[in-house]
Amino acid sequence: MSASLAVIAFGVVQHDLLSQRQSSSLRQAYVNARLVKQDLDAPAADVAATLSSLASANGVRALVYRHHQWFSTSVSIGYQSIPASLSSTVLAGNPAQQRIVINGQPAFAVGLPIPSIGVDYFEIHSLADTQGTIDTLAIVLLATAIATTVGGSILGLWASRRLVRPLSDIARVATDIAGGALDRRLPPDPDLGPLTMAFNDMVNSLQQRSERDARFAADLSHELRSPLTSVGASVEIVETYRDALPPEGQTAVDLLKFEVDRFTAMVQDLLAISRMDARTSDLPLEPLPIDKLIELTVARHNDVPIEISPTAQGALVMGDKRRLRQVIVNLLNNADAHGGGAVLVSVDRRDSWVEIAVDDDGPGVAPTEQERIFERFYRGPTSGRRGTTTGAGLGLALVAEHVRAHHGSIRVENRPEGGARFVVALPLVEP
Image (cartoon, rainbow, N blue to C red; front, side, top):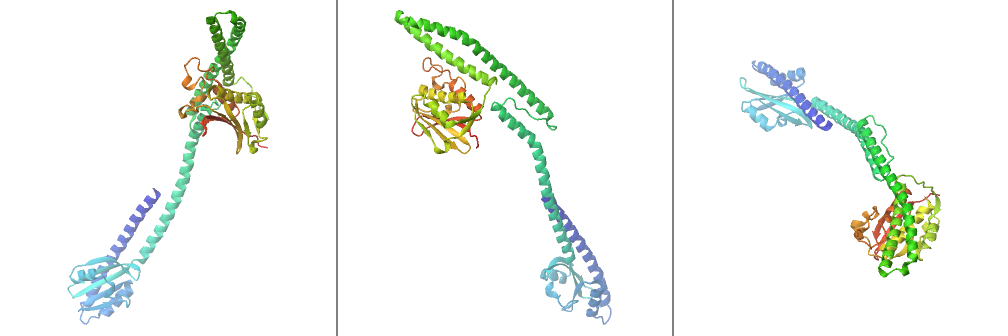
C-alpha cells in the first residue's frame, strides 16, 4: 500500500510540476515572440541584436528562421537541436510544442510562426531544475515508502503476534488437555477474557466428570474384588472334586474357572487404570538402570533373548520399578497371547531417549489397528468372539497409561522379518 501510494503521489506531482513549467514557458514564448515581431518589423532591423537582447533579458535560448536562414542566441544550440517534426509543423504555419532532450538534459521546445514579418520563432527552455526537483521528490518518496513499509511490517507483526498469542496458548493448552493433562488452565487474558473463562469452565466440568467416572470405576472395581475372591475360593474348592463329577460337570468347572480368572485379571487391570485416571495412585520416581531392570524382568519370562546396545548400558531413567516391570511383563504376555511369543527384547539409546522394543513372531498389526490397539477394551479382530483370548483389552491400555505417567511414549510397528514390534520410549536422566 505504501509503495502504491508513493507511485501515485510521484506521478501526480511529476505531471503537475511539468505542466506548470511548460505552461510558464509557453506564456513566456508568446511574450518573447511579440517582442521579436516588434523589433523585426522596424526598418533595418538586426535579427542578431534582437535575439541577444532576449537571451540577456530572459535567459532563454531562442532561434529565428528568416529568409531561409537560421539565427540562434547560443553557439551550441542550432536548428539541429529542434526535432524535424516540430520545425516542419511551425514552418507550415502552425504553432507547436514538444518535450525534447538536449545534451542529455530535458528541455521544452516551443515554435511560433510570425507570418506578418515572415519569421518563424523557436524557444528552448531547460527543464533541468524541474527534473532535479522531481528526482529529489522520487528519492524522498522512495525513502518514505521504505520507512513506512518497514514500520508497518513491524507494527503489523507486533499486532498480529499480540492477537495470535492468546490463540496459540489456547491451542497449546487444548493439546495438553487432549493428552490427558486435565489440570491445565488458561491464564487470564484482558483481550480474550470471556473466551478464557468459558474455556476454563469447560475444562473444569470435563475434569470433574472424568474424575467422577474414574472414582466410580475404581470403587466398583474395588467392591468387585471381595465377591470375586469368594467366588474364586469356591471354584477352587469345587475343583478339588472335579474328578468325581461327570464330564459335563468337569467342563462346566473348567469354564467357570477360566471365566473367573479372566474376570479377576480384568478387575485388577481396571482398578489400576481407574486409580491412574483418578490420580489416586502415587508414582514415586527414582533413578533406575534400565538395562538391569530389563534383564531381571525378562529373565523370569521363558528366557527371551535380550540385546542391549553399548550406548544404552548403564542408562538411567526416572521411573517406578513396579510399573515399569508391569509394562515389560504386559508386553511379553501380549506377545504370548497374540504374537506367537516374544523373540527378542532390545534396548537402544536415541539421543536423550532410551527405546525398549519387544518383538514377537506373530502376524503383525494392521496399519488401521496400530493406533487403536492401545485403546481400552480393544481386542482387534477377535473382539466379540468368546474363547479366543483370556484378556479383556486392558493390558496394552494399562501399558500406555504407565508409559504416559513416565512422560514417555509407546508405538507399534511391523518388523521387516515378520511379526510386530512394540517400542517404549522413555526420557533419560542426564548425568
